Length: 202
Figure 1 (spheres, one colour):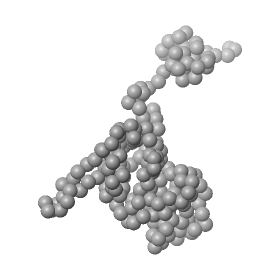
Figure 2 (cartoon, one colour; figure 1 turned 30 degrees about the vertical axis):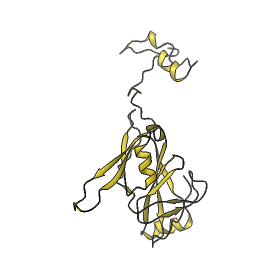
Figure 3 (cartoon, one colour; figure 1 turned 90 degrees about the horizontal axis):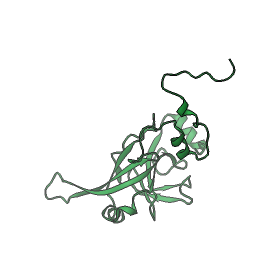
Figure 4 (cartoon, one colour; figure 1 turned 180 degrees about the vertical axis):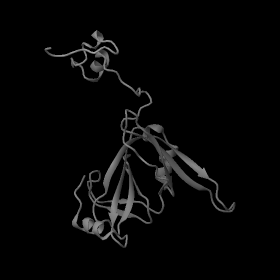
């Protein structure tokens, strides 16, 4: 992760910190959003090679909790994007291939006290792959008001796959599929469950 700037460290020391959550979907061109009001110009960071604009105005809502993979289990989460523009709606209504497999990043940035700009680059802390995107039409409280349109994006972590089993085994066949030529497990057929094999000289 990029080192903290002096201004960011000063903000931490003051105890008054404004955070912004940032979202990046690597389509062509990318979808850049942040959970706040108005547009935000992001600095050069690990993803953006130039300064780019991240759209706000409540565009990113219902941000789910994300977790790291634990005990071989990987998660699938859903983002709700509201107030989307025509391009995002086109992605939701278009071919699934335009979304599936695209990289999704979630990160945060530290703002100045007046929220006018970022004190440093966005730090990207989670990465996943998009599965599908669909348009969601919500009912308005007032029947005379226009329908509220949003988009829901299903994202899996980098190790999520419905075709991948939850557990793997230390058999020679399984090890060869992971690392061809590796001899680490070639003798496992000689061992049985609950049998203690003594290695080395006795």
